[in-house]
Amino acid sequence: MKPQGIPPNTTINQTKMSFRGKNAVVTGGAGGIGLQVSKQLLSAGAAKVAIIDLQDNLEEFVKLRAAHPTQSVMIIKMDVANKKGVEATFEEIAKTFGNIDIVVNVAGIFNDKDVQRTLLVNLGGIINSTLSALPYMGKDNGGKGGIVVNMSSVVGLDPMFIIPVYGATKAGIINFTRCLANEKYYQRSGIKFVTVCPGATMTDMFTNFTEKIIFPETSDETYRILDRLNKQSAADVSRCILNVLEKDKNGAVYVIEGKRVYPLEMKPQWTGKEQAL
Ligand SMILES: NC(=O)c1ccc[n+]([C@@H]2O[C@H](COP(=O)([O-])OP(=O)(O)OC[C@H]3O[C@@H](n4cnc5c(N)ncnc54)[C@H](O)[C@@H]3O)[C@@H](O)[C@H]2O)c1
Figure 1 (cartoon, rainbow, N blue to C red):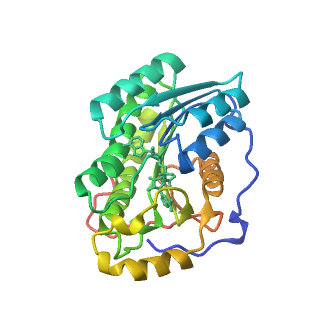
Figure 2: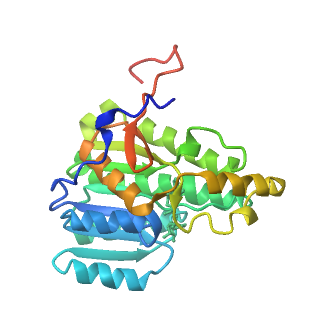
């Protein structure tokens, strides 16, 4: 699962108009990367965007609606760890929107000291949201097909000692998403699944970082690492996510770092695996 180097032509392209008329759902869309994804999808012409988030960001939501008066922006306050609540939320969105074309699952937390919550939000939340969307997207169920993008991280690929719990949830997301990107399932459902793995990004996520790590003795070293990291902005990451949506490649896993996006070559390790599985 090593990056194959950054090909010279992978700099982000100007977003094309392929989002025009599409209906999208963004979890974690009230802040950080998710808010940028919601904004950029609307700017790129999405017809309807539903934001699922725990927090209210009224100021931003008012601005978003004002900037896109002819498009629909639906805000739902919901914890992605709440399976029944997320199912009901997707039912409500599908009823209001008619169909769902794009789901970008961004919601996530960092708190390695709260293992249960980290598992339930980061991994559980992605699973809840993805599985809840399928009945409304699948052609096998009257939908039009579409694409689900799940948010992992570079630390889901490369182990990082100081954040093992967070890293484990991000590794799980890659496997979950790649499992669903199955050719036979795609043939009947028309749904594609993609994973994105950003590097360090300037958001609120790592506020009070050293209070949330399980090895406090690594604090000094951690600060040095954080300082050295070449951080990108949430808007940069979001542009790469829209670029990935345009690429529309089932099963792809992308790294997003330094404002650039590039695919990973995922080679099978298990030689005995039946190809038909
Ligand atoms: N910031 C980084 O360096 C970085 C790098 C790689 C991946 N990521 C991932 O990107 C995603 C977004 O992170 P960010 O940096 O924008 O953080 P952020 O804290 O700025 O935004 C996260 C958003 O998710 C929402 N959220 C949190 N828990 C939720 C829950 N239980 N239910 C619904 N919404 C919830 C928050 O309210 C917030 O709006 C996360 O999954 C994170 O793991 C971040």
